[in-house]
Length: 169
Image 1: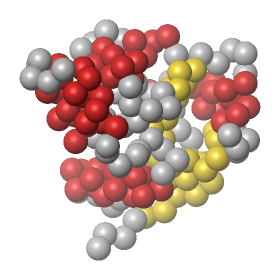
Image 2: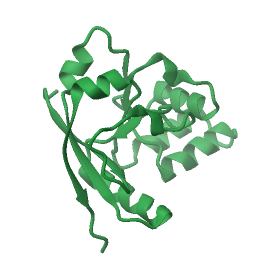
Image 3: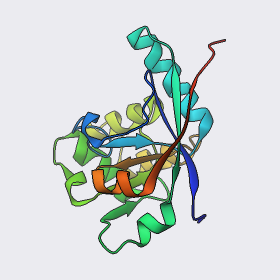
């Protein structure tokens, strides 16, 4: 793991001073400031949000001292390196309002995007088994999200780099 990584926040506004207050509780990883280390994913998300809010798509770039953050003894971190049973239970639990995210300040793992949500919905309603859900998820294009729910971690380990407006094609 690199000591410092570039990460991105997608949206419709320039955010030099991020805060954890804007996320909703029943998101994949609960409320917090969401980032990704995949630029293309951030661009796509920003365009999607801009279409919803009829504003310009913006990608904010930050430097995250990730290794230092994860090594901090006070950090309560959870990292899901792949789609698996634990990831599925965590996402489903948060979506059902079980607030599993409350045990952590930093959560990283796969995104439950539209295709993933369809699979999760099929699993939650009993139309497919857990093993079938995991099997379907493993074949999707890799993506990543990071949720930081501690303002102290944001202030200490995340530095604003740049903010750019995305051109729509």
